[in-house]
Length: 403
Ligand code: GDP
Ligand code: MN
Image (cartoon, rainbow, N blue to C red; front, side):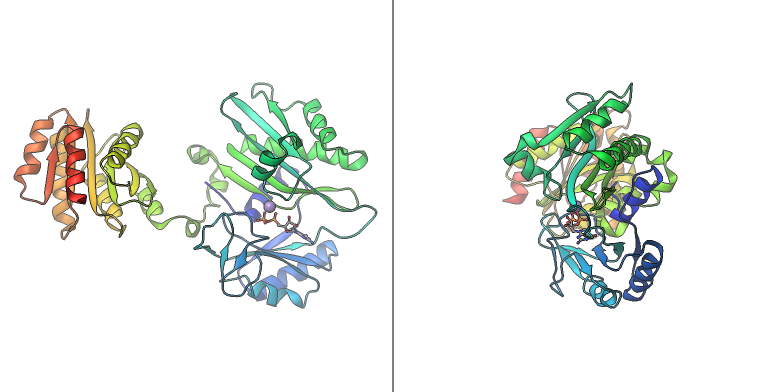
């Protein structure tokens, strides 16, 4: 699950990371109230107004309707409402949203932390993520903050410092100091960075995150270290242990079909092709997508109905696939183990009749326990459903209907 910047910052703060303070607002009025409160609390005269969407690159991104950037600076309280209006309700397009962009429902009104002082503010990059190959967590740090880390990794990989953390010992104090040293910090900034890294690592570990990325981490002109941005990815399978964080979920940021599938207990990912597929088991789903490609189609989705495929899950799967206007054919590929093929076949026929008016051809491939009985039920149903037992026959039928 992804969360918004303002939510991620609230987690960081709870774990003891200093953050750029701010308040989220849904209207220009509320943005002004938030700015006034910030001024009273922090003494700031300038404010940054930041679109809250689940995508990065907001600073360089543009709002379609107004031409405003997704992150803007207001140099007085008076400027706040208009600058917030330039973002709220608009569609923000960044290099991460795709050309269709994302609608902005909320802005974060934050204190300006790039104020002048004894030294220049300086941006750094910091992240914690899982290194699957090494089987441990890795902290990545760079002096090249504010830039896309992928670009840094490609052009100047030597500027990314990596420190691996053994999960059985956790982050050791010397490792946090090594990172602060690698970033060239000294004095108070060094001390604050050590504290920041330790708190960040604890936040990552204790929330069961798969990634915490702070880009930029800022050294202010008075040598404080704080998070200006925060991008967090949490492990869905651990959310049951974090009820408070699970509430951060914002379904308006997710694909509506994926939300519906999730509610029905299906594992669904929308893709751009023309053949919808419904399969039990993730591995079989991947193989089915390959078969669709080999027969000249493109998969319209990944859909794993899980172990207990029954009439209800098949119907929910059908409904979701049929909502995708690009779908020209549906391939159902079920391996009947504990769930017998005749039961799945009955489920398909039942769901078909219940939904009615299905105009796209359906190919059902049932293999495993009672495969013959299943095929018979499909053939005798009188519905526009073709049956196959062998995968190559199913593929040939997909090819036939697409021709
Ligand atoms: P992103 O573009 O989605 O990654 O959003 P960020 O939160 O990283 O902000 C983008 C950029 O806005 C930062 O790299 C900064 O250059 C700028 N920015 C963010 N906060 C402030 C601030 O308090 N003052 C000023 N002057 N610029 C800021
Ligand atoms: Mn950023």
